[in-house]
Length: 154
Image (cartoon, rainbow, N blue to C red; front, side):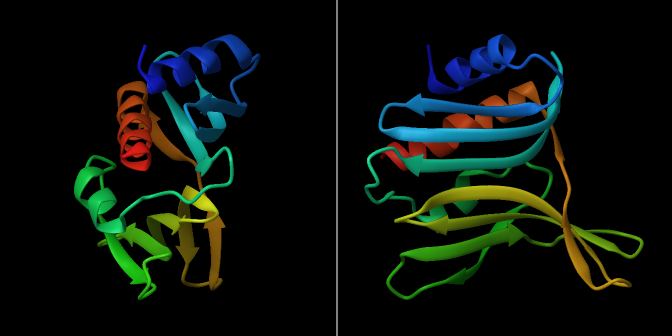
C-alpha cells in the first residue's frame, strides 16, 4: 500500500465527522492533515504539514516541488529562497483574483522545521489575509501526498 492510500484509509477510519485532523507516520516522515470537510469524493484541506519524525532535515528542493506539483489549479513558483537553500516560500503564480479577494496557495519549506501547505485569501479592501479551505478531489489529495512524500524521501 502506498503512503497516500494509508493516510486516506486512516481518514476514512478515524474521522467521525466531516472535519478533523489526521496524523500519520510514513517511514521517517510525520504527515499531518487538517480538513474542514471530507466525503468519499473530496475534501476541504485547511493545512498539510510534513516533518521528519526524528527531527532530521528534509531534503526537499523547492524547484523540484514547483516542477512536480502542477495540478492544484494554479502553478506554484518559488517566491523567496535563502541563499543556503534552508528556507523557501512557494506561492501560486499567478494567484486567482475573485473580486476584491486574491486567493493563492502558499507552501513554506524549512528543511529543519518541515513543509506546510495552506490556501489563503487576501482581502484588498480590509488588507487582511485569511486562511481558506482548498477544495481537492480524493485523487488530487492522493497525488499531492504521494508526490510530497516521494520528494521528501529522495
